[in-house]
Amino acid sequence: MLGKNMIKIAVSGSTGRMGKAVIEAIKQNNNLNLGIAIDENKNLNLVLDKFDILIDFTSPEATLKYLAECQNANKPMVIGTTGFNDKQLKIIHTVANNIPIVLAPNMSIGVNLSLKLLAMTARVIGKDSDIEIIEAHHRHKVDAPSGTALKMGEIIANTLGRDLSQCAVYGRQGIEKPRDRQTIGFSTIRGGDVVGEHTISFFMQGERVEITHKASSRLTFANGATHAASWLLHQPAGLYSMQDVLNL
Image 1 (cartoon, one colour):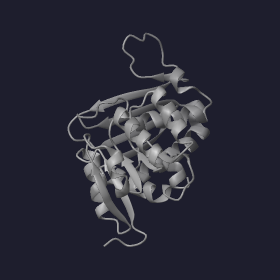
Image 2 (tube, helix red, strand yellow):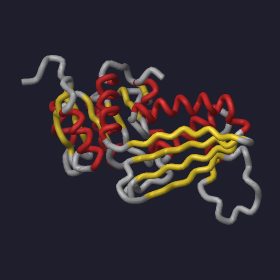
Image 3 (tube, one colour):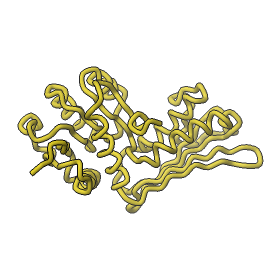
Image 4 (cartoon, one colour):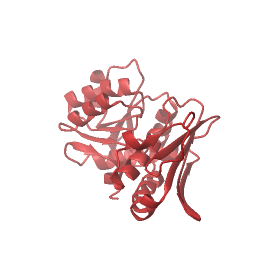
């Protein structure tokens, strides 16, 4: 029997790597209960009474389908899916006017602390540094660079008053000129079963500062997602980040 304050969670993408990790995180949390595990063939509208909030790690197309259903049912949503294009992001921003949404490319508490540190570092030494972002993930990850790497680049660029779409460099083959200090470089590694690694280097004359985060278990992200769900259930409509969740 569920406790009166037990939060019922729906997990979409329940058969995927992250879906399974989120279900495990829910089982380990005494304040949460798995209301429904949703696979790609299940219609969310048929199980609305089974959950209070949806945690979604699927694909951009599937996420937007669940988002529309959650909006119609006035159900909050935690979105960990990555790879959205600008049009899809605009839809999420619009729906957030009606329901509370946490949208984060990485739910890890450690990564989100790293984002705060990146802004501080960029503010102090960014203008005097060559900035490179290197990320590594398992061989099955389809989007590159990772959503986390792009978020890191965005935070650095915004701190420095730059537009990431204009200053990002994703490959240097064929570039026959010295490195432009105004750019932010990205390097992507895919292989094996790497859960997720990100290193951001600020190269200065005679020294460099590096901020690194390495995840060894998907439970790192899953625990962050369940923490976000517990927090989001008490928030008004709006679009939130993990920085909001963690009060960073």
